[in-house]
Image (tube, rainbow, N blue to C red; front, side, top):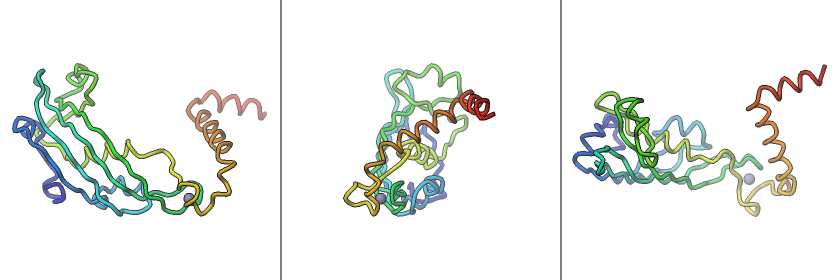
Length: 178
Ligand SMILES: [Zn+2]
């Protein structure tokens, strides 16, 4: 069902009232936005989802996603396989207002129409679960000579990132360079 591009659209409320369980495999190659963040389109995502309605009449999508994907090692720039996974606990709502009133343990999914592209939802979850940077284990890395300086580099990267987050830091730098 999930692997046919014509049937990505699902009616989550109908699936919830029917208490549908979904176990499927989704080729990573079909997830174009995810592939852009990876080193290759190899692999499958295993998808286990349960649709249902809780005691507060909230329609939910619960379950987990898992995949082994290939990303670029930030130390040697080779390909490294990593396992990613995501626990999903989504409350299906019609609008922002309803989303605000969802119990905290739900992530809101606003579905204004009848249908939603389930593969899009899955892809969003996987993108969020990708680590910011990945490395080989040091013995498998083509360039483990840099392991010793890695800690320093990480610190520098954090410094750059916090400068970027805070525009005032940049202003300070401009001032001091004058
Ligand atoms: Zn490496």
